[in-house]
Length: 398
Ligand code: GLA
Image (tube, rainbow, N blue to C red; front, side, top):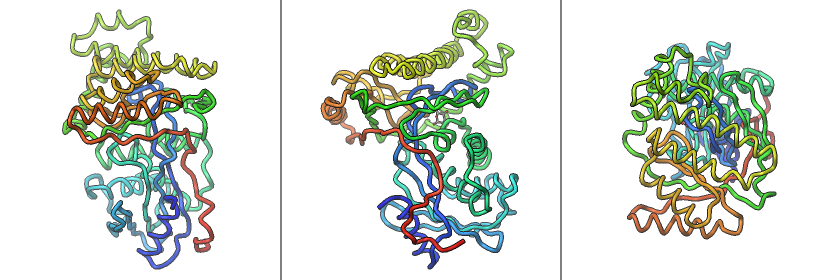
């Protein structure tokens, strides 16, 4: 069953009627451009086929209920929350994400109450942006219930910043705008080249199958305890470096200006800056290769990105390194960790004929290290968030 159909069924079970609409949003893989988003840099994500669906109906009062269908088949409901009373810190746990979106949308004129029921298959805790998928599905649902038209690309990019605000200010996680923009703006068969500073986007054709290649996602299923503090520390480090250099962000450092900038910084900040500046360059190089249809030559950029995240940014971990190294040893053209770091997933660019070999190699390497087996799947660049129109007549009118 699709996530949308599951959400509709769970809505029925919870509220005893059909929802008036279903909206869904995907998780993402970031091909390259890691920890560049909060430095006003470049990123290049694509959307996964895995989605979170929000089945929803408006309420006549100013209350919000949120429910979620767990993997055990049980539905957990939170709320009702009085919309006017929502404040950062007032909702804890998973419900803070949808409540935070409702809180932000109030300042954009969306004030009506709603019942929202969520279901989905984006792996959680895997660095594949299940939180952003949830936020974006809920944002589109609440906007849709408010009668807003399907958003344009420009509007989507703006909604992404609203969802990011929910996560930063309401949930309290200092993340950038990469995940939400990917979830809302990606299109099938393409990677999204985003310049965070200007907000400009370009859909870059990313047809792995035509090149006889696959992107294999290796979810290590590891999450180290300091992942949140580690993210915040790195972010503050880069902001401090920009401040010391008198810049708005590290984006303002050109690749050729790296040495001059490094000379003016304390030694502990130099590797962080080096990562951000070289990673921005790698995104540009990757986009060039994709535009020129030279996908098979992108492996070294993935490898260099991983080395930079491991050695300069220092956010890899043994599980991610073993995933990357075992994939490479088994023939992957390139591999790197993705997302926030300290666990989660890696990606490997693999020849179609070698997908099984690489998967086997990663499994064996994990077994040897005494870790549980990684979860793996081939990632196909898929569609971004939107309203689900084909829910087989199960929706109620209005
Ligand atoms: C997480 C954050 C993003 C981004 C990545 C690292 O996924 O949510 O904003 O910073 O880490 O590139």
